[in-house]
Length: 139
Image (tube, rainbow, N blue to C red; front, top):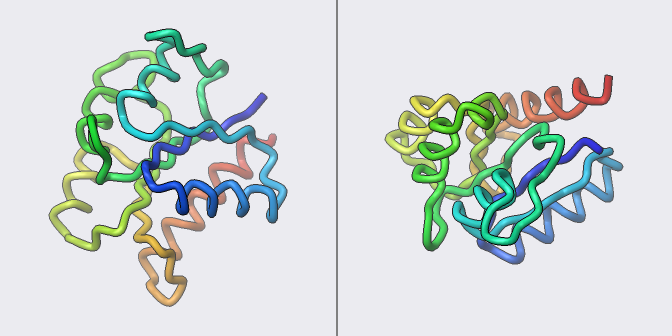
């Protein structure tokens, strides 16, 4: 089954994504992790977690999380040969250009500032890129 991994420590944001998937009938199973360590456990099947297989079509990643933040997670993800090609979209409250640049240097497919503001052209383009990845994976 196709899937998406949401790495997000905010319960409200997690619920918002879950409700959006239901509302728009996104045909993917949604897995959730509350920090980078939990996400790696799900991806690698370690520390008692069952590995997500097949790998997720997309990872939606918050940057500011406890234990292992988004940048640390991205570094670990890109260091794993079997995981480095999984598309990652950042979803964060940080509008700082330095965070966006650091994320781009870690090969993310998009950077979406929460709450998503479709008046902001950069958010809209990155959101549409995410939608394209999800829809393309239905083929």
